[in-house]
Length: 287
Image (cartoon, rainbow, N blue to C red; front, side):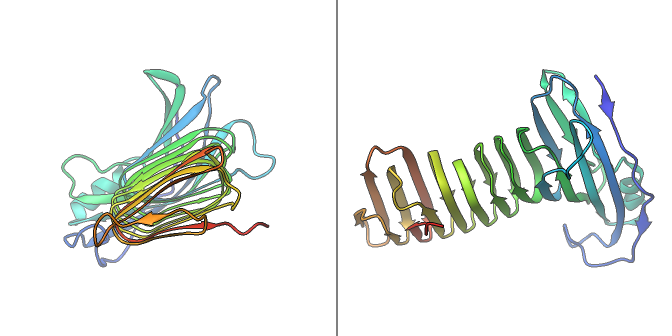
């Protein structure tokens, strides 16, 4: 397997500050990184595996050379003592990539990870630039905020905790966050977003076959074109439901609300769920 790496600039130790990951951390450092990873022939999709990240996934600049993924940003480190901080500084900070041994059509991009035995945190904060038509999956194991703009292929995101934002995306989006707010602007195609807790807003210009917004606790605002033919199932265990489409809303209990109905040929299956919060299904103003 080919392995692609890029060098990072030397680390600079900063003054002790307030811990970002947990209160015991008082030693901190940062490192600037930038580089590019070539995409080998035969690779059909990218999977990015990070421990912690604030990530901006966008499009490459015009004239970018060949099939590649570029990145630029910084690495932030927090540790509870100087020795453990030095261990975080000693590992590779740049992103590296290799094809998946079980599936050579997948290129796995990995970021820095906290070594075993080190009580601390390391996080990549920066961007990724990749051609719009390459499917991508972002996996953030711990804390991570993700913004995706301009994708034209299937995009997947999962993070244990963090906000998600999607703008002008086609090709389908499937995303999960343990806790965080989610917003999708100017969306086209399928949209499947789930959170254990957080508010959701979706502005869908052209719905696909499925539109799912589900949160454990939070308000859902779903905007779709007024003429959309859809099959709707919306349920708030504790909360109210409102809509612009004439669907009947019932109240199985004093605190819950349910809205089930169909318009036209039901081209789009709309599933809206909140355990505690309100649901609003509105008509999207035509442009």
